[in-house]
Length: 385
Image (cartoon, rainbow, N blue to C red):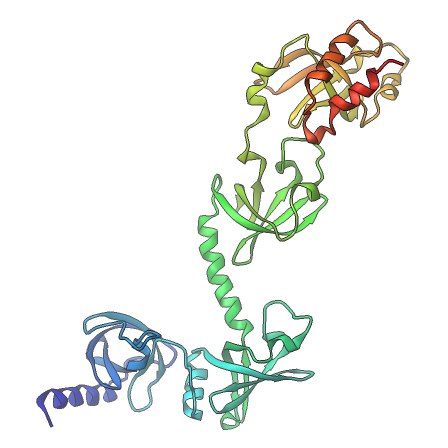
């Protein structure tokens, strides 16, 4: 025997006698020797373990590591020495290998060969296992047969009767992966961050957005756009990929508030340039209060027509003249950009300002779509026979 082979054999023998770790434990060690079939790993002190060289190779069969490199691996057996596995148990052919995977919690690969009323028949190496219907995926599948033929990774949750009764779960691994992904995602979810997500569902009050790893945030309807009273279903659709801003994160409830309108310019930022006191603009009544009517001049720009600005018509009579949805001409009375407030007054039909309104309508053919083409509606209101 060559000196190098004798040295390797001595180190291998020493590894068989060292048992400082327990089955299922994840350890980190340094590769000290790579042989034809196994490699020796120093896992601390005088402890050394063996690992199959095949687990240190890539898909093309080339070694991914060298002597001196550090690796992490799972202890799959301490019987007759410490045996490590860095990858999944891929071709478990013996009961011992499968049992080692069960006791260490190491995942195994298997092929779904059939489905019955209770679950799936899964082939793992030369052994047959059972996977309950509820354990094949995180989301229940409408047609269980879609998984037949699938090659998946499973965790062995039961191993009885010397391997004659094996129960596996794919869901357990998927949930662990999702939790790991969720933890990673949550580290990036901070107020002010821009994140990408997928719209899961749309409700009257907003939409739920999946940010990855099962982490969801709420995009409230008030944060979808600058226009008040918009329909969430017109802003986003289920399955749509969108970019949103994180507004708030509640660490106690783990609720996440998202915003979409923050990615566009606040229309109030240009109000001093585009609006002046005395101008006449098209507007639509969006809501009524005891003290007056709120009027939208464009998405995000709303003015208040105080009850005192309407012609006298008895208690509450002014409200009957401008029901919600009314499109009319309004004169700007006051502007406060800092408080985002604007006072407006209804321009009565047939008044001296009608000409101004007609000119405004003619110059604004491309009225904001969310106002329902107010210029066109005004044109119809002011048209003379």
